[in-house]
Image (cartoon, rainbow, N blue to C red; front, top):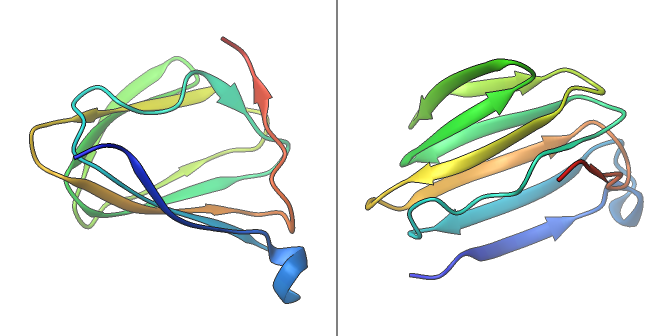
Length: 102
């Protein structure tokens, strides 16, 4: 299964102060490269696992976990396959603002 973004919703389009990404992938090692946002991002993992780098820390997140990345904190994740990773990423902004660091 390839990486599939199920839905991107910017809050400004629906009158909300948050923006949402729904993601599902079965590709081992896939995920975004290092980046940061000027707001918090919350990951709600529905199924599967991923290794998250948040600042200088690394941790594994799995089904049922909720991870919060503080504003202006470099972060990335990589899916740990072969099971499907499915999650909702909540951006505390009415639009996506991303600074790519690598």
